[in-house]
Length: 243
Image (cartoon, rainbow, N blue to C red; front, top):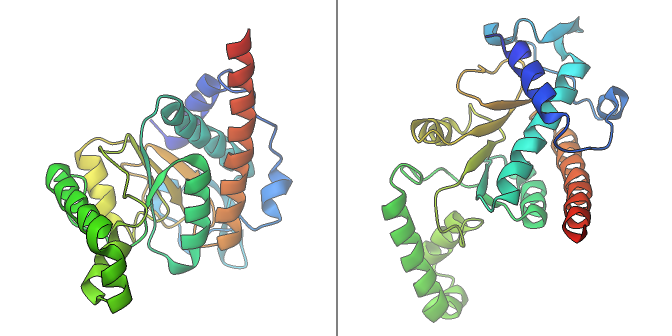
């Protein structure tokens, strides 16, 4: 089944789930979210409306659908207390990711991927819990000394300190740069929401978010949109509980 058809079906299914604020194409054109790369992966041949100045351009309506479906996934797991893990390695995106995750209650991994973090979770958790014990008892002392190993491990676990079980959903900002994390999620059949550009392979991605995934403006715009939608959906949930 073609990805466009899949998105259309998921969009129809999601339409009645959350009465989200309408989204205009012009709103994300302003931040250049529709701008792809010079290359177009064969799996995305039908998703572009053409090229301009050598750059492939995404279909705005397709982007709207992908954004809505991605949020429905995020909201679904958030409502059911499922852990969501956001994965990123780009230094210039780290602050935006941290702020978004803090507000949404998500975890984030933004350092070099630790092989087996997901596929060998029981051992990963033991190592993390051991470090947290050391941090609690000797953290201040080690920080004052400027202990390099301690600071390195502390940075490694930043964002997942309180993650006690495997994530129910992974959000990956770049599946090429985070290929190992992507493969581990696939192996464990953890659903993946991924920010994709025109040169990326769609294979294995459950919910793509199409757009300029290297653009800080675009990533911030998407995060802000999801925060607005989250606020609106929370109000609806609270209102329904009072009835």
